[in-house]
Amino acid sequence: MAGAAQPPKRGLQPRHRPRFAPVDREKTCPLLLRVFTKAGSHHVSDDFAVRGKEPKDEVQIYTWKDASLRELTDLVKEVAPAARRKNAKLSFAFAYPDKRGRFIVREVGQTFAFGNGRLDDKILAELGFEIGDYLDVAIM
Image (cartoon, rainbow, N blue to C red; front, top):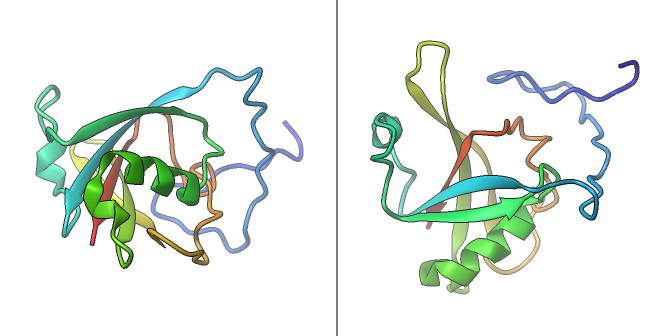
């Protein structure tokens, strides 16, 4: 499709910021995003190695690929009391299997529980999210 913006390839950062058309949330079915929260740090890749034995601190969110980190921050704050602290910082990472089936945890951005940061408006699609990826959130 000519002119359509492509998400960045995994592991590569785009030289310019691609533009993504907003999703029509009235007409587009949401995706299930499995979110894993942890205080202090991200989960390690081995935590996701066995299907069905993922970390227990899971929240399932129905959302769209145009969800921003700010939107996700606000959703995490609803379920994780530690994220409601005035000085809390949330670090977001995607967890996904590589070509050999081993999970990779790749940090993609940080927000503050309160206030606006420079990455708050970044959306999942811009960050290279693919349907099926997990979202790992470290609350610091």
